[in-house]
Length: 474
Image (spheres, rainbow, N blue to C red):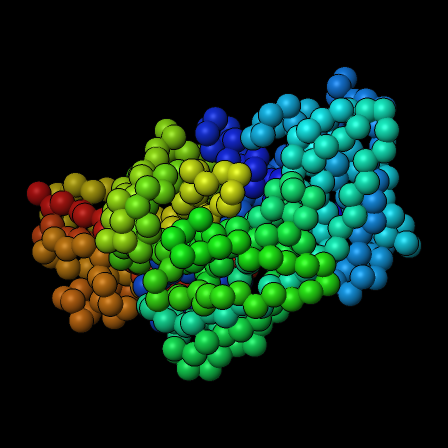
């Protein structure tokens, strides 16, 4: 079975966010390594990937005698075989589906699903190439046959590079389009791999195309990175719906501007890294007023949190800060994926942002000692490949100390900020490390620096510091 439709899953995520239900891990997607703040690096897609199928394979006593059928064509009008088409029905918009089934298109692009109940809130979903599409509020007859053919059109977009992440952005990440189809039903198309021609300079304009269903485009979400997205709304003053035809390409009358995109960053701690219980400061930049945001956290596969259903409503484009506490049960050596999800736009459009906080520890065998008593430092840091216990790649850890209180360094060479190197140690394949025996003579503050990985897009991690550990000497 092909992957579940991210569009239907996103609707589910809105329901789960409201209810506080647990959700499963999000898959990684393209994440540029940048020279600026590490919290710009994120490793999750802008839409929750939940282990829940709202349409495919649902058994329900509400099934009827209706048939939903049609054809799936590509942009050029050729039939597409092998597409798994999901069909479902809900009682009211926003409710979970009460009935569902699926069928795979044949060589002629034809699909047919039986058992549909009478409904004015029918759902249809599938994938053409890499583009996932959804139509809802469809009318299903019972008994009878309801026919819905699918053939995509395109919009030609442009986006200007700019802002703090301009140097790391070359190609668009997912583009999400919603609107009203030619049949009058709402639609969404999620472009996983939109076509583009990358620009060269930091302020270059990038152009490309994205798929949409025939009808009127009314909203677009454009992701420059997992933590940075722009949107366009037909309802804003001066805007109007953009018409799209099957097999046609419509130029968009606007340009997405990366410099003024919505952006989420972890600004504290500086390295977006630290022990369980750390208080995170999320900076919300350039958001329009009135966006209600919810917050989700996940460490595969066991820990999920909604921070007691915490929400925040933005007040305008000025930078705003939200504080979140890393769960004390967070497993060291892993990345806590923090998702900031808009919850006010459903079902018009959805914006979701992701940043990564690396959970790591620096412990001492004793934190309050008599003079002359030795102590040993130890902890766990992220190492690439640690999703399989004991299969990670060992990395180096540098231990630093100082005799006056300080937060973790904000530069990679801690000596520039008054820290002294104690020793360099190597982790095992679990990311565990330990020092030699140390004998501090006065109260001493310790911190550990760990190396990052060349590729942080899959199972790698960015370089960072741990939280500070204090050893008191009596």
